Image (cartoon, rainbow, N blue to C red; front, side, top):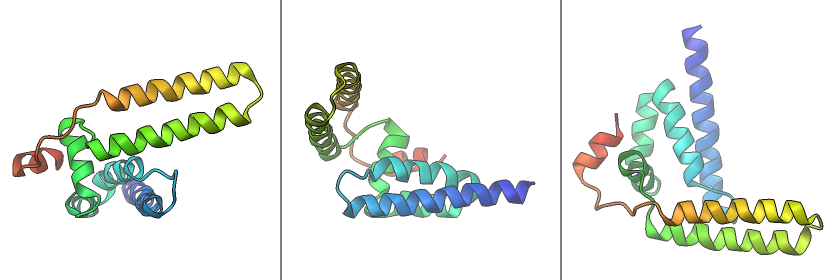
Length: 134
């Protein structure tokens, strides 16, 4: 059973990592949330893979900032804000149910507010990286 659980976590990690890489190239597809899921799953199934993601030059700093400080880099906040605003405009123009429009726009606005109020990461230090590896 232990090896089946480990294989399950590794599969989740690789699928999430692949989706995160796709998100780099496909507009409106998130990257960071998939990388965070990949690190979480890899930490349970393959700590070596989790360490590799944390040390990756493209994905690592954002993952480490979130794990160590619960912080979101400024550029990621701006990108998320633009994408959320675009999503709101599309919803307003395409949905006909007023109650659904209000519900979704409110939810996306609250999400945007939450993202905007997260701290920005301090400069990455070896201590931050060490804490994130736990």
